[in-house]
Image (spheres, rainbow, N blue to C red):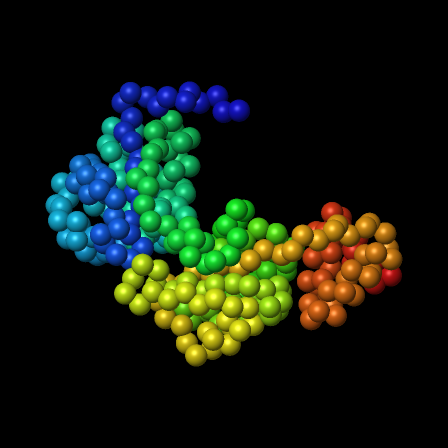
Length: 286
């Protein structure tokens, strides 16, 4: 347990993580305009988008505006922390949704917490929860996996490790990589695994396409535009693999017969059996 007191110093400022609309400006919570207008410092992922947002909200900023994006996040965090420690109210916004959720913000939050600065939030629209809600897939248990790796090999290994995940999974993806991502998911999870591709959520051209992963990969081959969130149903509950040489070899063979590579099959079986993948590898190649 941390020794840091739960109450920040009286002289410290406040870090406000402000959720912004993922599409329609009128989805912005009323408090967003209030916080932006009254901030001493506004840290924005894209200052041009911030200007459009303030115009839509009909407000004028009185505080300093600083850019805070992936490229300068590490270097700018100490500057923002200094402002917080001097008593400033710093509002952090990203292009859309909640800061630090696959967006800049985590480093600043961690630094503020470590320094005993109060961190609060203005709740706002979320692509993760919106996609989950409209997907038509189970929502009682879910996990957010963010963006998949860009390289095919790394992406395949990540998905292989999720083959037995029983919770509904939510992914972000770039439009030009959506076809490849869906094809890789179909290979790892099976063509028939139910999923939904949610495109341009809350915007004019919003579209939700539902079907099996194989079917969705073929659909994406025609081209995908806009912001994309993919929701995939979790795996059916499976019994753990018994930790015996015969059971491990049989389980790997079963996965290979379903089209999985031996390397990915070994990884999946090791997870189900609760043993190191090296142990499964040695049993299979013995």
